[in-house]
Amino acid sequence: MSHKTFFITGANSGFGLAIASAASNQGHTVVGTVRSEASRTSLAERLPAVHSVLCDVTEFDRIPDVVDQVENDHGPVHVLINNAGYGHEGILEESSLEEMRRQFDVNVFGAVAVAKAFLPRFRERRRGFIVNVTSMGGMITMPGIAYYCGSKFALQGISEVMRSEMAPFGVHVSALCPGSFRTDWAGRSMIRTERSIADYDTLFDPIRRTRQEKSGKQLGDPEKLASVVLNLIDSDNPPPQLLLGSDALQHVSDRIDRLKQEIEAWKSVTISTDG
Image 1 (cartoon, rainbow, N blue to C red):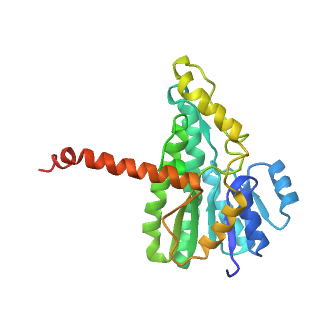
Image 2: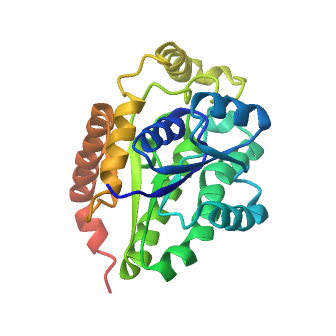
Image 3: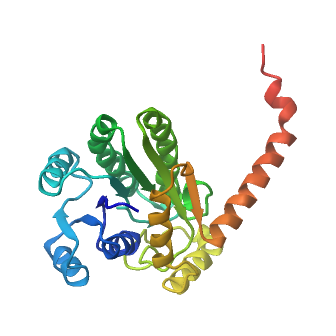
């Protein structure tokens, strides 16, 4: 792979840190966003070659200026890794709309705001690569993560439209759809709504308990994901979405099979509405 400049949101942990490390080790220029001076110090200690910039992706009005300064300091960015995000866990009836708003501000509006800051630059240069980190939760659903799945479904759809709109200009857009990986997603990074309705105990308490017990022990290896991402960026024909992890493959394949069965079962009703 020729030398590239990466802009990675949420570069101080999880997938962002793994991709920043892999790209930096291969000699690429990496600029990573962090949300605090403490995170900036931590990133500098772990990855001294990575350039950090303070940027909360929900500060939408600041993002164009941040991107402008980054390109002034480090030259044109070739790859955007839209990684910043977090998981919210909570039964829908128990979870506030404010929690939903925050989830969508970070996972959807933040990602779109960062992408929009780069779209005109990539379009004018007739090159660029955008990787929007979604989730298998952008293609399937599970009880207790309605807000998270909703945000990832939204970003998944936006990514596909972004891909079709940018393709004529030589700009690639792919959605990365990981399954369960050994990151802090289900640990300290997850926001959990307190339980309040006993009717949901039987359904949800075992799910929450299992997720907490498995945190840090998941099958997925973030370093292997980072390696895949670097190979993906070097592809001339990247996929619209890329599932990562055997659990993602199984869950999404099962959902596609069920969807096909549902479509067939209701086919006569579906076509009955034609005029």
